[in-house]
Length: 143
Length: 439
View 1: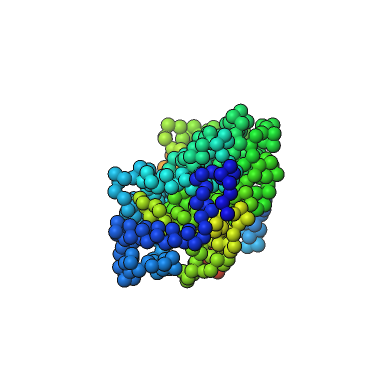
View 2: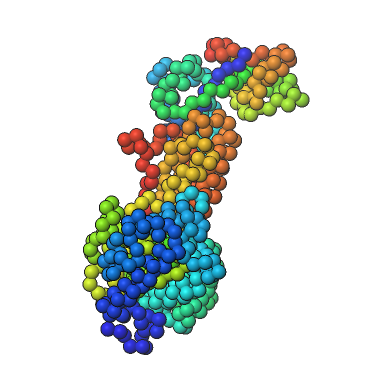
């Protein structure tokens, strides 16, 4: 299953992540994953949140430019080879990972990998064919 | 009262023409230039016709007020040669300055025009106390810009030894100043401030050099900048004024009294008008400077609106020149910015942003001064159309904006991407220019 991640543009200055974080907190929106890609001048804040629609609404209402992107979340065993096995399944397909990030789920000895592919549908198909089943958004939020 | 021949360059004699004689000469030249423009320049003739005017209607200097104004867009609309009054076979030089839509503004000179230009610059330099035997380094850009070649011809005409250093390469400029024993510099005041700072970094003490004068122009500057320059280099700093549309540098220049700029009004007739109503204002009143070229052949300019705000100073200068003086230019009546001597219009920035994005994002121009040099930053708000969650795509966009701005403006500026709605709106409209330069 594909998951919708939201991204927003932030200048690389003190306080520029605090404001959106507070806006989401006030609405009771949980940030399940967060990754910051940055340059010296600006960055992109990427988040998977408990309520994407509401989050988009509240951020846009406060002047943020928000973009929704389809990503795939794959749960792997948190042990050597966990990531390599997933990447092996993509070998030779020409599918490109535009970016990815990962976070551990310590209490279950698992790790969750988030992928942004150039072609998410083809990537999903390929992973499923290899017996890898990306998480649905509900599953991710439960973990 | 003309000074003795010892202290006065022969070319400076017209500076001391008695006022009544000067007015007669101006009227005679005005009648001539109006007739010439009427005869050879279609746009001017049409405008005269609309008002029911012919050159015969100019019977006195006051009659100049009947004539239509010429504005910068007239040069653009008739690009490239539409305002020429001479056939190209009589033109010996073409210069161009930045325009607002990518097309430059073209100006032309006959041999006689170059001679007039040279003569007024000789008078500028002589008025600054320079003469044969001086070594003058010209650090204005040589090329399409009128500054470099204009100052060069003037300095050569004076009989000085000229170093055509052109702009840029501060270390080499300082080396030349030091090794060649340069006695006078011509450049923008901001560039000279930069040279002062760079010299200090290189351990060169400008105060110990033979350098004694700087003739600075092509951008507005202030008294406090003059003090800063003079304290930092122990030179005497002179303000020179000019614009390509009229001739280039040499329309007006300070003398050693430093109390206003003498306008070479035997060649350039000055008026100050109310920029709103177009009414001519009396001497002493601040308004927009309007200039008429009295002797230019290739491209006469009749009542050209400079957009520069100044006033004509009443009374005469202690130096004895009969030429009227104007106050230094402090600001403009349009939104043109002068950055390191280069004209920049906010509309050019819009053109560049449109080229990249197809739509106009909110943007703001921030002016600062670092190490004596003006810096221009263009902050662009990231719109939903521009935003991409891939950092590489944003960097690409940033790079494209940077290149488009550099290309359209012709100078290096800083492009920045900022958050949407981060630029303050006043009554829904963004304030386009924030000037943080301290004088």
